[in-house]
Length: 418
Image 1: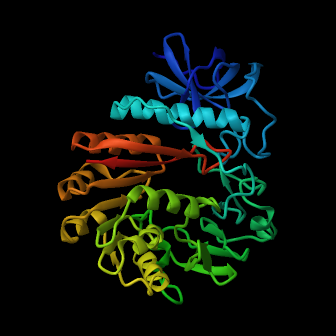
Image 2 (image 1 turned 120 degrees about the horizontal axis):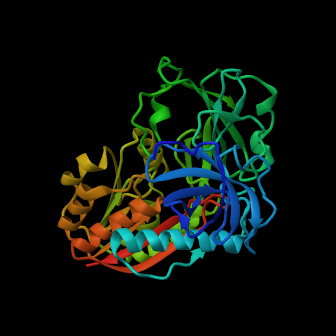
């Protein structure tokens, strides 16, 4: 194709949802990924990106024939050309759940060769659920959300994923250009705002600046200096009857209900028995380790591995009364060879990229009777499930959660048995 379609407006009928917050349409032999549409709709689509390949990207700028699942958008700053925060703000709850179920099913079928029905569970809150968010700061010093697939910012701080208190005062001042703002609401409702210096700035900051790399999702970039602007910068988070104190700019599940709900599922499916050895890989601050430690008992052991040293520090402090728990600070792929042999159960909650071939192979070689795998990306989750199947495991249970309402993101948990 010699002529770019960028800037053209095409009337198309959109089909199934794809992984990434769009529906798939076809026009003149090419595939178009159309954001802000719903399956079955006829829309006028503005082509926003065309690199000349077999597909291009577009925004639905006019709805010609609407889906019955279309609603008035719940996010005032999302939509064509606007913030990328809420790519399903225009879908009913039922429509959003069906969208996510279709994506998970398609990824499992295509990548893992698994045919299974998927029911995406909801926790009944579409707005106000988010307790952690990250904002960018533009050259003018104003904080905002990134536009979809862009470094540009939308500085209207009105995304309804977070309670309004999260944004209080943030738009009334200027910040360091190029910085990030991390906002955390802890379990007591206290707010913490941390300014994280622009990439490439000095990593020296009072109290140690390596905390910027403490995320369980383990960012590989150099540490960035930070300073607490509101609150202490150390958030108190409760799961069940246990409390953690963690960095406000480090990793913690964004949805207020997620740590409790995931812990209950992981504990049930892990089926840990007295005396068992358990591996908890990508353990963060040890939330899942705490959930199963009591079942392992005084004769068992739960060994957690986490790349973020600060998360391990916080986990050790929170779990000091659980002698069965041993949290180790190291990349999983490096530490796995030194873990205790013959684990009965292995729990994994890897970053968005998934565990991958080498880690899954090492887990399978250790021979646990059960694996409980948590995934926040349907494609990498399906790939990892397929790898377990190739090593002689079978998929026993699967649950999917609408843990990121108003977005196309979905969290999945699988139980696999030998």
